[in-house]
Image 1 (cartoon, rainbow, N blue to C red):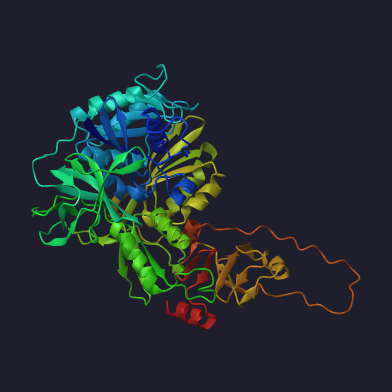
Image 2 (image 1 turned 90 degrees about the vertical axis):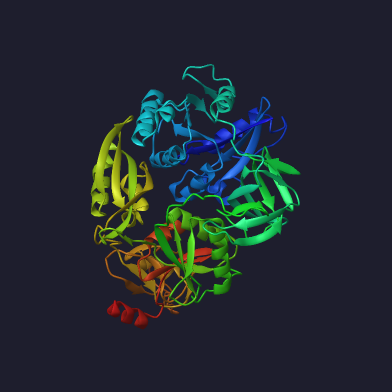
Length: 605
């Protein structure tokens, strides 16, 4: 049986996982009566909730005596490190582009990585069933993108298919018969070359994905670059840039992919994508080889992190009431375990006591990590995100991470978006009309200028705007950027919030809490309508007497509170504030809970 290794790459929500569902169904990977969830590869709880792929996953289908290993990759720019590693495992790629939305930032990112590795992608214009599909115009956009990214003559001659992943068809023409995906299967077999890996050399594999299994321990997935892997063979682990073994162990379990399952096999040879268990120290980017292997395989360098946050223990008055993992030792172990498998995240001990600096590629990536820890029973507090700057190696000038932001908005809202992003040091580089009286605005903007902007963007566009962003290198420091313009409403005591008090406080600003919620001194319970912080008492009750009032008590009607999601809370807080995250709540608080210490700290700043 011949073999093909292919990755599916695209911008977020362009239909990768849905297309994989149909490939699995039409290849016979499922029984006719088998109940399979939609987006079967998005197995994580957060992936299903958010509708995005966070971790890369492998599967395999068989078509006409050819086994095709398929890797579904994340589509969001914050998880780009996964895409970079996965492209090293494959010999071909399917580039999915939404036939209505067209080329977006992550499309450019993933295509650039694929072209740099010498791959010849197959372009699939997906979602042809959308009423606003514009296949011909998007096909021209894709060709222009290939040319702009410096594709070779061979890469520019890419095959093009028109498809609908949801309906399960792909054809060479937009008005084809629209029956099934046989044209896509045939094109993969004819266009993607079989793996060219030497079988007669000692076994070597570059670990690309790390998982933890309760029964098998550490499970490492990667492509065999040379030789054969056999169960119970001795293995050596080598780190990039060193010939000293990190670990010597035994291959206790060898797994190959068949549909959605990993099945145990006795042997696998060069070119195949496998998962193996039995090692305790090996991690992503390590070379796992036969015992006679002396040098590691070259590993792809990963783009550096651009954003950092401080993870601290929860030292507030409500600490330890909802979570089970509250100590700095437990938080430290969890963070360093995450950094082992996720090469885009870096963790180090902070100068602050019982705190850790965590650096990543963006707010979403770090937000997913915090949400995962919260669901695992951790309690912690998070500081405001900050960008990681650097010095230009030639001029010594200070540089900061820049992003390319694409905003698709209705025409009436274009002016306010341009104004707000210009205030955040954004530079408008392109304005292009779209169908349906919409405009696509392209900006180059500092990463810190987009922190906390998404909620403002949705408000300014009445919820109709769509924004996408991607890391675009480093640029000169743009100077100060105005942050949040409103102050905070800060509670002065500990107890349970009372409706009577909140009714009279809502004139002071927007509240974040409801009656009956526990509060404490220093906790932020709302946003002040002015630019200064205001200390308020949400515990004040109505004074009662034994004299009956002649009039009727007025109804205390409260405006529904403004509930911040975890990502919104992280982007909302100022430098002197923290986000308190527990399994049951997300709260905002001042870094200094004591008002006297808070005033002293503000004077010192």
